[in-house]
Length: 121
Image (cartoon, rainbow, N blue to C red; front, side, top):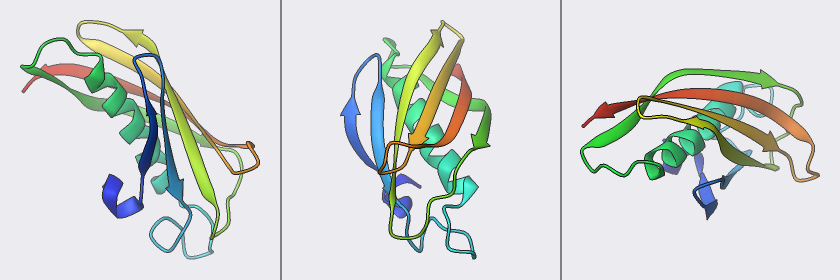
């Protein structure tokens, strides 16, 4: 999914992940603006990768349980959005992450919260 949408990671750390995604023919709705599903895919990608990096055990992984998103501002074709995900809670069984997507002018485009379950592989 990340490859198909053109998601590129810019920063990976234990306290924050940052990735960018173009607003192009793969990520827009028929009206030429960023598709909400593409925004959610970027947010869940960031949160899931971040959650996986929190794990110490190699026999565990994380899976999305719930994600919500508030779409604040439209981004037109030709632009780019950058997502920043940070952990809210990192537990043994559940992780909660929040993610903000911003446009090239640093204006908030989407805010999202993702709950991950820690499960056996």
